[in-house]
Picture (cartoon, rainbow, N blue to C red):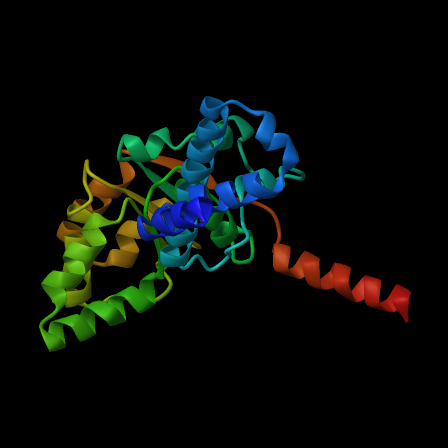
Length: 254
């Protein structure tokens, strides 16, 4: 009865990790031979692990990464993709986030830019940082709607709080004048305080022309490019390779 009462109290205090560990200790004969301090230490360790796992689950759920399973451990360095292994190991430590730096990923379509960006986002979540994935065309649409319903300031504040904002498909579609101004607002709120990951088919040198407004382009790029790590992916489409591999395997199976 005493143990059951303790379990109920732990759960009411939202110490679910400790409650689960205590239940396990009760049915494990080996734990009865441990000292009180050892058993208490195991309970505390389980609670810390439980909370860390719950936080990671929450961060990953909120991030809404397009490639949710992408992770740094699975990066393919084979071939001539242009990946610097030393740089990727450095980025995996997430010091670039602590220093409010950016990552600019460019390369041809199908080259794995989004996957790699999501792997960086996944790693950031594992280190306890908040992440948000959004395609630039969709973000532009969200900001247009926010202007209409009066929630634009709220949206900007929400984006400014995100530790790592992952902007996918940068430069995919032309921008209107108002959209360029909105994009500047988003980028300006993050200077020296937060980090941004950008993926684009356009080389960085072409971004100025895409923005199509010299003054705003200078302002936006000044805030993004100077404190950034650039990754230029090379090689043919990985989607094409996967399709060809799948077709070959299908032929062999048939």
